[in-house]
Image (tube, rainbow, N blue to C red; front, side, top):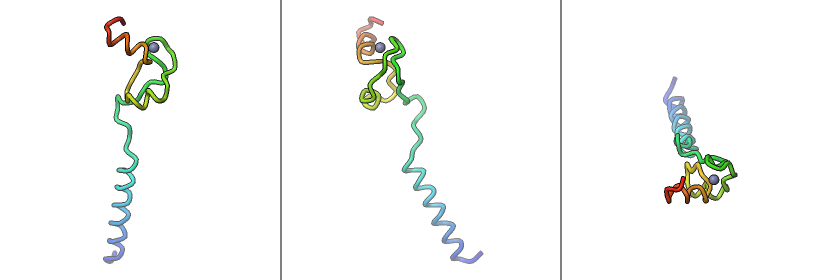
Length: 69
Ligand SMILES: [Zn+2]
């Protein structure tokens, strides 16, 4: 293996690393539920995005915050 091969290998290694950085795996526990764990209603995707890891719809989350559930 000459120096050019080594340089090419290094470039490929760095590109693979950069691609991993661009596509991070979602952290465990941050995945929002599609359905409310309390009432089973669909959780709007906007809410799922706004509150990563949410498991409840807006109404149930409000009830839980007020200690009603
Ligand atoms: Zn709900």
